[in-house]
Structures are given as structure tokens and as C-alpha cells.
Image: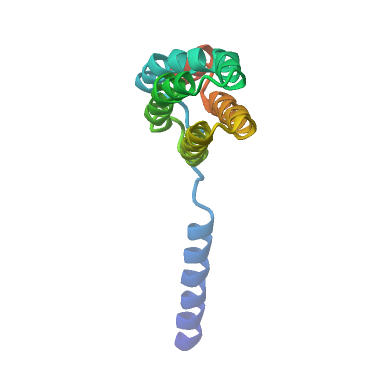
Length: 157
């Protein structure tokens, strides 16, 4: 009889341990949101990117009119600044959006290099195609950027 009690006790201890380990309260973690500091940093750099995005037609006109020096000035000036701003914003995006942001910044650099190379040889088609792709990447990046009014309300809640 004492042996049966010890086996029964062992079984009950194992059962209780199993039930306690499986039945613990689950803590619901809220989805990640932007802090006020992140929103401020993002708001600081987003207008620069948007301003360059709004000038896309200007670059295409420069390429079509074969003004290669001005094309280079545009890609090395405003577009390079926009790329830098995109880098600053990427580090403040939500962790799930950061890899996509980094990829878009890398792709933008590749397109800027290709536009520069096309300007070296006077290849209008290549420069136009790469400029369209560059501005498409800027558009995709701007979609990753939070809409500041709704995000700030969520972070305060």
C-alpha cells in the first residue's frame, strides 16, 4: 500500500506540473506602435522626401532634353538628400517595416548609380527607366511611413 501511494503521488505531481506549465495566464502584448519621439523624427525628414518625389517630372524633363549635367546635379543633390533622409527614417520605423525600408533605400541607390551611368554615355532610355523605378521606390517607402495623426493617437492610447 505505501508503494501505491508513492506512485500515485508521483503521478499527481507530474500531472499538476504539466497543468500548471500549460495553463499559465497568457499576457497579451499590444502591437508595436510608434513613440512620440519616433513620430517627431519621422515628421522631420518626410517632407524632404516628399518634396523630391514631387519633382519627379523635373528629372524626367532633364533626361528627355539630354541635360546630363543637370541630371547629375539632381541625382547627386536632392535625390541623394532624400536617400539620406530615408536612411534616418528607416531606423525609426517599426521593426517589421525596417527590412523593407532598408531594401528600398539600397534599391534607390542602385537606380541612382544607373541613372548616373546612363548620363555618362547619354543613354536616355536607360536613364528614364531607372528614374521611373527610383521614384516608384520612393513611393513604396512613403507607404511604409506612418500616417502621423492616426499613429500618434494610437501611441497615446
